[in-house]
Image 1 (cartoon, helix red, strand yellow):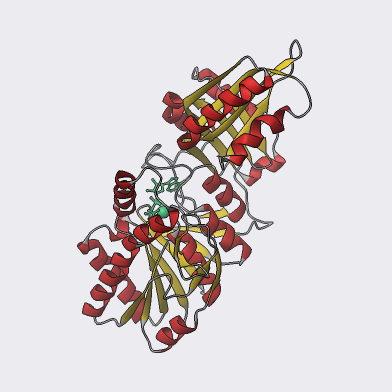
Image 2 (cartoon, rainbow, N blue to C red):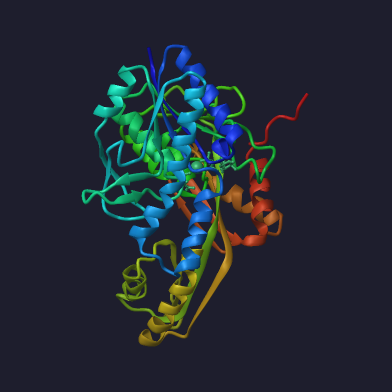
Length: 408
Ligand code: ADP
Ligand code: ASP
Ligand code: MG
């Protein structure tokens, strides 16, 4: 008998009928003799709706209260799913994060899981029950409700799978696996049978929202077999695996993109030691995360310093830089929040030179101007004007042979 953790995302539980469909799938898996622990998200759109309500009430709501509010979304779906399971004749119990004893640190709205005490869940499983746990939430040492950041139900599922030593963690969603790129942007994207943890981690951190980054991190660290598959169609999905020697590696596994970027430049900064710290220090103090950083070669003893931040932090960062600019005697601050980052990811890049230049050539041939570049061992990222996003993704997808073969 195997133990599976199933996770169903927002679209998969978006209506009463869909919750019934999910209950049906679980009942079938149960009748095959497997133990099932289920993690569910809030119904689609619900977390955004709750966030909207909070923002109507207060511009910067207290994070503790925000977590109390946001966690209600998942509480609705665990109860409804258990009702659907009961009416299918499949005994089930629901658990909020706190009831499931998912202990987290105290960082509200982006908490990390520290420990899960599974003894009560185990008891239910031993009695033949399906265990249904609210995703995205936990409880801190004080007993306060915390949430795990957007997409956090993926992490709840993986953490439970690790704690229960499940045979597989199955992330059921509205696509039938991990694709070479978001199929909403490139309809010719192809489902991957497998992808390595390392590549999936890069894809997730570079903007592919199919899995939360922390879920991939966690699965890699605790060796949790992880699979992404469709709630609505049968199929093998995509297995996230360790790299195997004999695996024939594609040069590029996927293309990720991030629309949430903005860039800022301090122009004409005196070129002297301590400049980067003087510019980025106040940005870090304001809790703003910096992504790419570029400092130009000095000319006439001054230099330009550019970096990117999340678009939500753009206005705040711009404001801080005005002050920094004056203090440093720099020329001016400029910025652009209509930019995106497009990245190519693949472990095959390690052993092949020239990927980046082929990428730049392909973009140039389409008249797409590259504003910033950054590379690492298994990825190349470029910053582009927002209007070029779709064209860039499709061009690179074709250039690197990722398109699916046309239907016969
Ligand atoms: P859920 O609500 O089930 O958690 P998400 O919306 O978080 O679902 O994630 C699934 C979505 O991720 C897909 O609908 C798809 O548009 C998007 N996506 C982005 N990049 C990829 C990719 N490389 N492969 C598959 N899906 C992707
Ligand atoms: N409901 C949360 C969100 O929308 C968590 C999740 O679905 O994973 O981000
Ligand atoms: Mg998700």
